[in-house]
Amino acid sequence: LAGLLDVETYEEVSVMAFKAVFAGKGVELPGIDVNELTPEAVVVMRAFCAAKWDKKDVECPARVAVEAAFPSAHSYVEVVRYYLDETTVVRNLLGLAKYMDFSDEAGRSEISSLIRLEILANSKLEDILVPAAFEVLRMVSIDLADARRSATDIILNDLAMQDEFAEACTGATPNEEAIMAHARALVLSEELLKFPKAGSDLMILMRPVLQKVVFPAMGHPDEVVRSFVIRCIALYCQIDFSGAEASTYIKLFIHAIRKDAPSVQQEAMKAVFDLILTFSLSKLREDDENNEREILKVLGEHLAGNNAETQTVAVEGFAKLLFCNRLPREPGLLSRLLLLFFNPMTEDDSRLRQCLAIFFPAFAAASASHKLIIEKIFLPTVRTIAEAPRGTALHSVNSFMVGQFMVQLTETSIANESQKDDSLGQASEIHERLAAAILNEIIDAPDEDLAFTKTLCRLVNILRFHATESNSSSLNELHALLQAARKSQPDSSCRKLLGKVEERIEWQLNNSDEEVCGSSTTFEESPVP
Image (tube, rainbow, N blue to C red; front, side, top):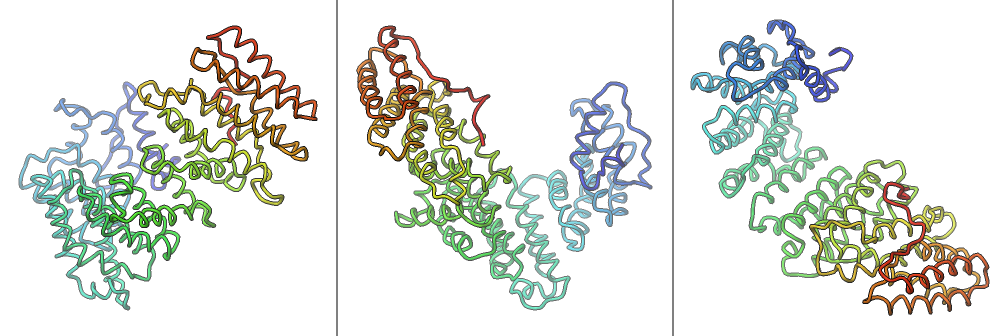
């Protein structure tokens, strides 16, 4: 089974699969010889330990299996050292460390030495080992601060001190070993910045690392290296809770978004979106409103970019910010996301479509004020699609489906009861206001714009109204508008649709507290593209 799963390519999936197998009763770990470990064998062992581990039980099957394979810390070190050239085996052996007993100080010291000198400082080994090795270093260290000091010492004194490291930083013509040492130093820097419970102590430790390792690589010719630089600086900004570092480096990220290669642009965009999410846009603008507009402009340009991956990053970032109310309430941005959702050009971008398919219902349900934003974009968005020139992607989009989707989003039944706000009263009459706006549009529409008028008539027909003492006057006004709109229409199908709505409102005015609605579908039947 392990061979069929291809554990080297799908390592974590394989662990999950075997973990499910071992969760069953009576399934035991097959005999494994640590002298002849294969990737399949060590993945199976790791999955068994994950399934059978019980921290409170000193004789749990996982603990027994690990102690049988590695009677001491020394034996564990020797096994890891023996398989250092086999990345999958070593990474899973490192994953087994969490099930071992590190109460012996001599054993912890030996493991720490192995991790530091033979894995983390060995730039010839694959970088994929770094996260697992860091986790083991944290486990065998006295505390988190000790692990951080060890990590920065590796970067500054083991890697950065190698010959020709400075040449690797400046993009000169160094030897391969110097390039690998610099790459490993950047990987370690990024991993260190991910440590939990960051703060001022980590900032103090990281400043010399940034000066000696990260900043010199900003102009490196390899875009992979520049991407590491962006991620490291972004993480450094995040551990400064005051937001001062974020304000300092925001211009660097904006420059990268404008000028650098697509992969670096994407990392810089993620950095800016995360910083806005953490600190708010106003805190990053340095007391200059022009900076705020410039940041949004640069990010927004990639919503219409030619690079699909960059466009998806922009969509995901703006969706997060809008959902968390981290942006000025500009309806135009939400409309752009909606048009991208239905645009045939994004049909093959499953990540973008999935993001927006989750975002819009969640956004509408999170707050009544969000529904008011959707109300503002309703007619402009439908009109944009209806007026799209022939030959453009939007021309083929069904404007009724888009309008129907927005009708569903603005229904008062689609709400999170725990997040009602002061806009709830206004949101309860969105469909009445939408109907009035649509009917005025129908009355003013020229006769030659029949297709758009028919779409508007169909949209009025699916709006939901509810007669109450507070909105009875609104329904009377709608009734008058419906009569005027019906009389203004030369097309019989439009008059018929409007007449149905008029009949429903007449009935509703005579039967208050009853909801009258058209043929709107539920979200389970939602017209997603």
